[in-house]
Length: 400
Image 1 (cartoon, helix red, strand yellow):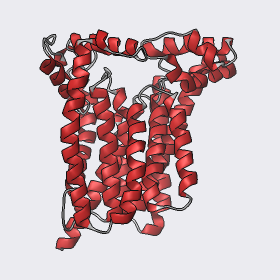
Image 2 (cartoon, one colour; image 1 turned 180 degrees about the horizontal axis):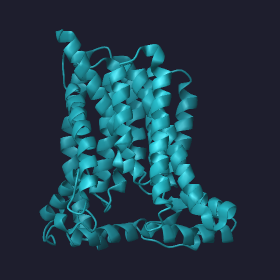
Image 3 (cartoon, rainbow, N blue to C red; image 1 turned 45 degrees about the horizontal axis):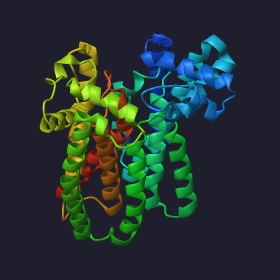
């Protein structure tokens, strides 16, 4: 292990190692243009350039199952890279991916150190970032995934830090709102991020008053669990009804998106193009609900049939410890005595809520073939696992 004063050197070592690992992987692969979405983004970037980045003209001259306006900020990045680099625009996006990935990795290290102050937790975060296949897989692709993941994690950290550092609260909340507004038009996976902010920021004020009392925290998590068990089935069955009868959707807004998702449901799709996960075409609302339930658990799958041996091995090395320690951290939320400190309790709760919201959202929408929709949860998962390791160490220390 290392002494606390050596932390900056250890952090810099891991960031350098991570940069070299990700850079070497991206360099060995080159700019990967095989993803189907890339051609669409290029077409939209041309429209954006043609109309001088006019958002209204862009919206009127593009068409997709999801309103393209929700991709505007991402397509702007593609368009600027096309203007600056021409046919090498993908190199520019991959470079931005690398810089963004390293930046949020540094943010993760600093957050783990600030919360735990334990060398073991920093070493854990560093090692498991290197083994996070879900991250480095997408660095060479000129897609929005790495950048959206980075934006989500920055917003997540800014929100959770409000509890520990309440100074200049209104200015910081305004900054969070500005970043969320940017994310809303970056990628259409923003609903769980928005819901996380809406739920979390008011709860921070609640916890500022009641964190010292472990009984209050225990009662709060029990109430949250009861509410979740009440509303989640209602949401799932309401959603299942519209998946079975998409023509009954009463609003023109998102009707095309709903019909697109409903077609997947009617074919029994769980993970897109992983046919071994498909259900038989559902015949009643319960069978539609079971598809959503299956998709929720599939969001956390470690491996599927089409993964190579190396891909599966790396995923097992990464996810088994991360899931195990994360589950241990979540268990600590329900302790009445000898549980986490108030601030650590809040951090564990925030990680859990964030991960749950993204998993639940995609269980009602779509799970991609390569699990790239799981990417926004990878950094919070590593943080949650590090918090679980911290609680495990604390537990052993108390017994010693």
